Length: 132
Image (cartoon, rainbow, N blue to C red; front, side):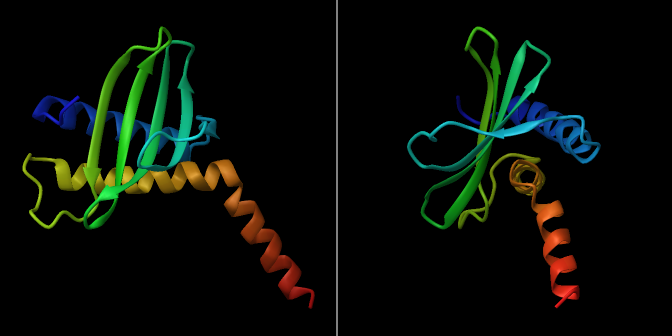
């Protein structure tokens, strides 16, 4: 599914809501199964029983990493998929791509921190260091 202006716009709205719900701890992120070709990490969240959202990082770009989002129906059909390079040499070609790339980077990090319990682990490590 190629990036289109409509896909970028829809993905930005979706990612904004996902960030808000993740920060409010209303979404449960899990680590996805072994990622497909080029995907470094994959995190998934269910939206009701109807949809699964996947956010992933990519390594197949010449300048390094990129991020993507995919929305899948319960039947397995792909509803939306957008992939963006983090820092393309050629720049972005569609309006909103730069902002979406930044938002996807943030969402991916929030999902990763949620899955691995980063906040509680850092807090515990700081407490342990204080007791030394």
